[in-house]
Length: 80
Image (cartoon, rainbow, N blue to C red):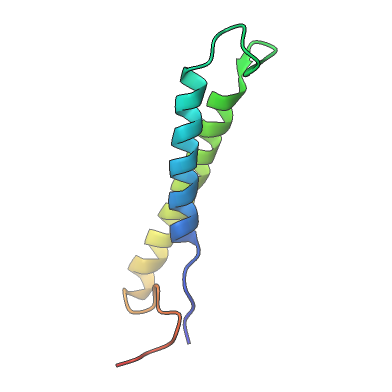
């Protein structure tokens, strides 16, 4: 019995949300509340989220290559 690989949708979720936060970080002013001690917090956290999402996607792809496409995304078992 194989289970659904949660790394795939979770990776895409973090990549998309991280990209939105990075875009919001580019839009902040220097004197805005998005800055903390001179650091653009939105940009940094967005970049971190994108990095985490890319790692999740890479791990899901590595698992799919190692175990074949029949084991990935098959939550209900074989229904041949």
